Image (cartoon, rainbow, N blue to C red; front, side, top):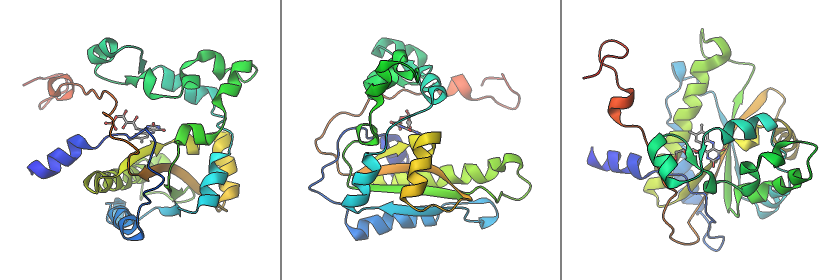
Length: 238
Ligand SMILES: Cc1cc2nc3c(=O)[nH]c(=O)nc-3n(C[C@H](O)[C@H](O)[C@H](O)COP(=O)(O)O)c2cc1C
């Protein structure tokens, strides 16, 4: 129990550079894929497919896609940022602005007409150098039994993500989730590059690798249990 809690606690987002001289071996890639394979899904429907991108050419092509994120994505991300450690410690939710590319934290860059928009540049600035990307796709024409908007089916994609992430943590690998890949213009280009069938949607991608250098993870905060746990009735505390 202590081991699993320690792995859960230590799992973190790795947004630094990966060591391109240290590839993730095929055996290790298979372990991560097995972690995804054994994720729980509603009625065991196994509602996902995966694309492993490990060829230098394809990684390069993905990196050259313009990181043309929607203003909505940038605005909603911005709303969750803190600009100092003190602000983050007080809020206990969200993230430090310094964890993101500068353009994400510059409202000027959100305006499709503004010159500052060019700061968003290409996906390789967001993804960073990586030896391995894994894309998780789902079939938008199916749904979990009885689930409006397939909410239940989408929850299981989160289980896939967490299984892979915990496996990477225990394998000593860094893991960075990229939801930008499912944002309008970026997704469109990825679909064409990877020949993704029309009914399949990109849920998320993750970049995986060994850290180029040992750096402390970003400051990570969580609410206290008493801030979100209710007993027997909502708003009833222990
Ligand atoms: C569904 C989901 C989507 C996420 N998308 C991104 C993303 O696009 N870019 C990113 O840098 N981190 C992304 N993250 C990572 C979260 O920002 C991170 O888990 C959160 O800030 C807590 O930090 P920790 O993972 O270090 O504990 C995502 C995480 C989840 C669960």
